Amino acid sequence: MLGIVVGGITVFLFFYAVYFLGTACFSFGKQKSKISFQKAQKKIAVLIAARNEEIVIGNLIDSLKKQRYPKKLYDIIVIPNNCTDQTAEVAKKHGATLLTCKKKVKSKGEVLQLAFDRLKKNKYDAFLIFDADNIVHPDFLQKINNALCAGYLVCSGFRDSKNPYDNWLSGAYTLFYWCQNAMFNRARRNLSSSAAINGTGFAISREYLEKYGYDVKTLTEDIEFSGICAIHNIKIAYIEDAVTFDEQPLDFQTSWHQRKRWSVGCCQCFRIYAKDLMHSFWKYHNMASLDMLFVYFSSYVQAIGIVTFLLSLLNFVHIVSIPMIGFSMLLFLLVGLVVIYFLIVVFFMVVVKSCHKNIRKMLHGIFSFPIFIVTWIPINLIAIFKGNIAWREIKHTRNISSQELLSEEVTQE
Image 1 (tube, rainbow, N blue to C red):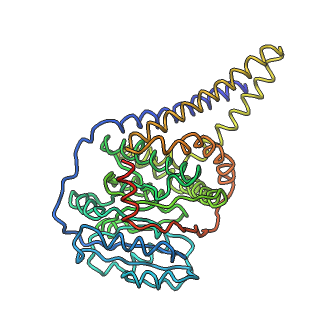
Image 2: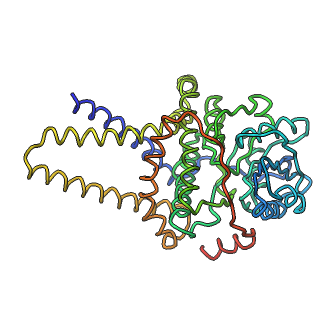
């Protein structure tokens, strides 16, 4: 009986993996319809929710002021919240408009809700969201304008890293985002399906907000909002050449708390939206609803995988009593793990190459990425049984200008 249960679960896990690997292959195809250049015409509010970001927010604002987009068509608005430093003063000094947030907020989503409510009377065509530690490519706003003019209500850019080479952890984070950019979002774009928002560097049109609002409930507002768009059958455009540079954590404790928040958020989203996503998939036959249902279920999948592995070992020990056979099977298992490790290494070399990045410089992240994934196992196990967690501040200290960062990018190429 145990063998049948393990076998059934293994088949499910196999098809779950095949779904994502199979769709990832479309990232190497051609985009069916490209978004053409359009005259700058969309009035955009650039929103930055900032919590104790005095070290880095100035460089973000400076990079936004260097946009190759008419200055009269965008405003840079910083919403300081829960701050105990000089974030507001630094933002004002660099030329941003301040939007006060006097009440205590528990998440970035709440800050954005407040901003949308306060700015809804202003005649903005869209709202563009960044994190305070970002640096933005000079053509970002123009690329977003093109997508909005093409009729998209929500769009997202390419999330790159400010510090991919600092250590193994920042390298692993960078690979995680590059993988989502290339193997998920680009693949969906080539399939004429919907991308998923990747934390920062995304735009929401006024038309969308007037029709559907912005009612997020979890600590992972980006992935939750992607699911809400799927439920409403709203296609999120992926703009690969609209690039945002983001700072990655360097210490494991920060990474642990951040990824725990992501995993708890995914579990919350599954419990809240699973039924609606299944209904949306049945109604619209849209790939995006199935995508988000599977993404929300990812924490459970990893937990199921570990339990299945342990059950397989238990079943193996129960059946096999001959020492030599037991040794041979153990050896086979170890060889299998080594093969899987090197397949992961090769896969991420392909990811790096597909993102037009330097493989040699990313070897530290590539070879350590399996460790990064293994450390996610206890995080996901905790997330399944933990209903909620507090929103914790992420310290950002990578003080680098857009000119320095873009010069490094050119050198790497």
